[in-house]
Amino acid sequence: EGGYPPPLRAVLQARLCWLLPSWWAFGSSGDEADDAAATLEAFTLLAALLDAAADVSAALHAAHALCSLLRHSALSDLAAMSPLVPRLSAGLAARLPLCRGDEAQLWLLAALRELLQSAP
Image (cartoon, rainbow, N blue to C red):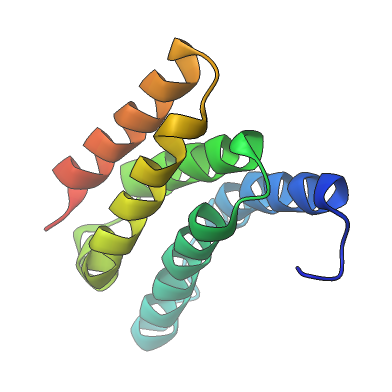
């Protein structure tokens, strides 16, 4: 992350957020332990992206990916990511003052609502 110039870093972060739900759509591996680890890694990645988003666009992509994963996760997946709820919430909230328009703020707030409603 640190070696890339900010514009390229933002594009890479946004593309990664776009790919994550696409990868997730292919389903489980069939191994519960492996799936639980992959779930935690996916949500941890989104938390890291929200923490270090290069710009608001990258943060909005991360918020969109988060909502997609939350809406399509099993209850066991949601339980696995529950320790990350405070970090994900803080990442979403930290991006609110950086938004230039109401629509971006509303999207982040909607993602925060989705997260809090989905948390076990």
